[in-house]
Amino acid sequence: MNELLYGSTRGAGEKVTASQAILKGLADDGGLFVPERIPALPMSMKELSVLSYQETALAVMKEFLTDFTEDELRACIDGAYDDKFDTEEIVPLKEADGVYYLELFHGPTIAFKDMALSILPYLMVTAAKKNQIKNEIVILTATSGDTGKAALAGFADVPGTKIIVFYPKDGVSPIQKKQMVTQKGANTFVVGIHGNFDDAQSGVKAMFGDAELKKELETCGYQFSSANSINIGRLVPQVVYYVYAYGQLLRRGAIAEGEVINVTVPTGNFGNILAAYYAKLAGVPIGKLICASNENKVLFDFFQTGAYDRNRDFILTSSPSMDILISSNLERLVYKIAGNDAGRDAALMKALSETGRYEITDQMREQLSDFAGGFAGEQETAAEIKAVYEKTGYVLDTHTAVASFVGRTYRETTKDDRKMVVASTASPYKFTRSVMEAIDGKYDGMEDFALADKLAELSGVPVPAAVDEIRTAEVLHKTVCEVPEMKAVVKGFLGL
Ligand SMILES: *Cc1c(COP(=O)(O)O)cnc(C)c1O
Image (cartoon, rainbow, N blue to C red; front, side, top):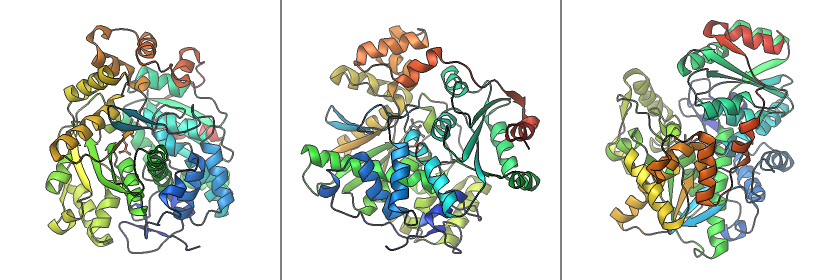
């Protein structure tokens, strides 16, 4: 087997194995790890199309994570994609109004982060063993809501790990808070802080950089790690479901072998759509990758003009997981279109951190022809939810609706009528209020759980266990602290 190594987008320097890249998260020079080449799929799409989700995952991941044995990968996959998901298909592909919605929200937190965060803990523990790391891995995370819960659910009761999540006590939604403070698992710790998300983030970053703390941890057999979205251990598992989606279309006879499809992805940090791009480069017949933004349309402008510019107002929308002005994973694409030139990438990223802006060359822009960009405003998003519901009875969440609108607009304006897969990143039950108000103004002001019951009536989809459970779940995490106390709280948890 040809070993695939990973290098940093910012340094031409040392290459590491997949397991080392997963353990490190970020390269020492601040760059992101990228594979030195994108491996080809190990068999034809036709052969892949008869595999289960787990078998597809094994076929794809063994090409990317070449220093893991097949047995190790199988154990990681079986641990992750089991009955935590509420359907054996793991990612059902649903047709509505001529579009194929790839439902990535059947995991424990009913949003797409589960696809990666349910397997990352297993990959990390396996990577630690492979690299003779005896320490217990302590995941330290600050969250503004969604990632924290998905990481907690993923790491809960995974041997060899502990997870500590800090959230702004008054800065997350009541449902998000309830989801976190009711988290089970003896290795989980959840702390509300008196401060905002930035305070939580800065506190966590300070602990990562604290040499003295690092020494104390080491003495007691611990080391910190991060479940950040730029970890290659989150990106690779996301390639799998694009391979699987194409296989499903083939299996159903919805497309012919080799037929090219388009994919639309509701985008924030650019991880999900980058995975679709990797799937294309690996051999899945994907034509256009359509990047859908909400009103924070920094990526749309980038594809339009070649200039990335975060100097603009941050807009709070009904698709909060896409309210992002720095799309970290875009750096991996920039590196590629710069001809894998780390120096050039580093210069652009330096400009981004110093001026909030960079501009790519015409030559680089030419290599973006696989991508198209679009965006949806708040009214268009709501209207999309209502229109698809009224026409088909299928209910989209707000993030998926952004993509659905952008995909539709793309088809209408370009006359490119290839089959379209839309990545469906959250259950409508996660954003019940926005979804129900989009369908009918009369739901305005109704209580959250009553709205969920109403949504079940309308859509015929039962209330997911993830929502049902928190109605009555016991609060297990009551710790609250001031920002300067965060370190002491961590030491307390770990008995340092
Ligand atoms: C995180 C998230 C996104 C954005 O995905 P990226 O990989 O960050 O582009 C979109 N929708 C939902 C529901 C999410 O949680």
